[in-house]
Length: 158
Image (cartoon, rainbow, N blue to C red; front, side, top):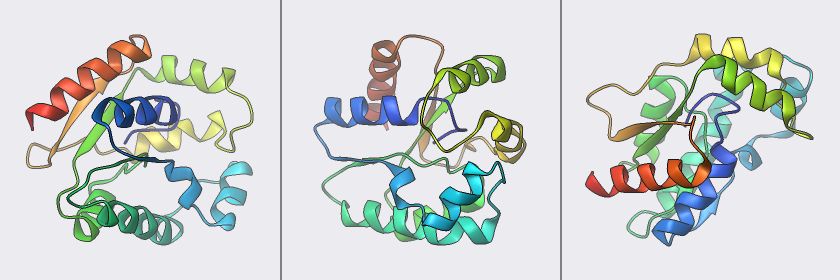
């Protein structure tokens, strides 16, 4: 989980590989209308996110007892609650980082529908993990290998 540009699509598959479980790209669960909206620089609202969260939750529920990693911004507690309702054992890895670093990374990536101009709305929406939520937060400043090592170590402790 985390705002766009934190590296969910880079780190997710690496964490899945390290854990020996399948990976699913959360962006692939978005309906075409959501992609069009974000491509136009229009933030999604909760109604837009509902079917997407339900699809991500269904994938996670289907992996119950087997494990899996799925990328999903899951910015609000309510979104994570919705995912937990679908997949009660879900654990969150919150990729965190400085806004300037994330904006720089977003500016350098090519071919992604999520524009950097939506970053402020993502940070405004973000509700970090709370103490009663199963999960860990990992800073994305280091290189991917170090992020993955820290993430896997922390996740195995849960």
